Length: 417
Image 1 (cartoon, rainbow, N blue to C red):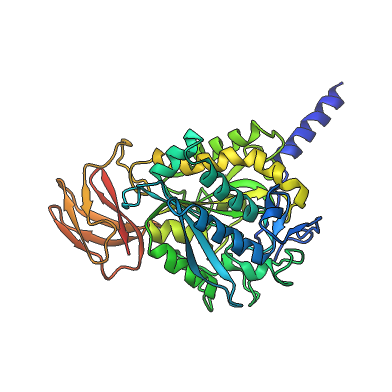
Image 2 (cartoon, rainbow, N blue to C red):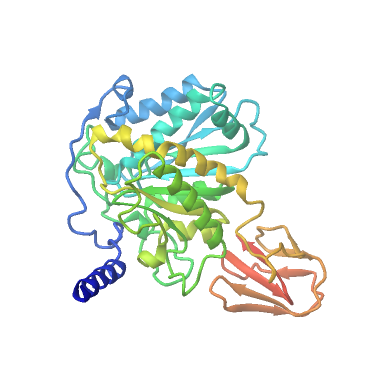
């Protein structure tokens, strides 16, 4: 009996200590991750009615144009840019009727920057269709579209997805047509790995994001099922994200909602279904950290399917357990009042007010400062120290990014653009 007890303990210990599943965007790609699945293509909009097919490139373009024509009061079609081979990188902008005054916060979904991770591609197309057709009928969708400007980019690497031609996603590859991993090709805010040449697709995406004020976003991937929140560049013990507690609550709500429809999902990396990116696998030059750091926008990476290319017949099942979580995540934009969170020692909002913030040159302080004013970069390194009572800070010499201001027990955040 004692031997059996020891054997049980050893088994439990092994289960607890076994390594996490390798991250699917590890470089180079994990062997065996590119499983071949049964893929059926839709060559017309009508063939997408059951949402159990992948669209050809031409069908994708036709679907986006069709929505823009049928719902002119609710949406408009933006072109983010073009791929190296000239394919369009599109974004559907959805706003409530009569709410085009710029007062609503801006939300951004983007999918399939790795061309072979196409589950999110179809999920985003179906989300567009659901929000547009549900407006005025479904109260949740109506309220959401009336209170948030929703931007959805279903396909950000079309050359990778349609590597073998516009007629099929079979044979899709992770990279763009220059064989570059787009999720290793963003400026690294922490300076650990400079890039050789920024790719055309990413340049267009950076320009588009820079021309908007997105507050919350998500980047959809495949190959695992887990919510990956920032930072990717560090482990949580090295440098936890200032909004870590908020991220955990958001991820937990996403996963818990999904599991009410299918309890077997979001379990292949860990039991929680969410993880800080660097605790899974540290990566440089990723989009997630770039957007969080440089654009004052909370972005996470959603790994939504264990298979990178889900069989066409499984797509409706993935929508069934993801639909409500994807919709609810947009509404999370209303769960935080300020920018990326910095609070004082007691956890209450700082009494210091900074304006304009974000800024390109100077930021002005409102509130009493009875101690030296210390400005730190996101890694905690002091970049500036000023005497108490300073009313303005010149930051134009600092690189773009997020900086933390401390004076006494008060803290605030400066966003330099």
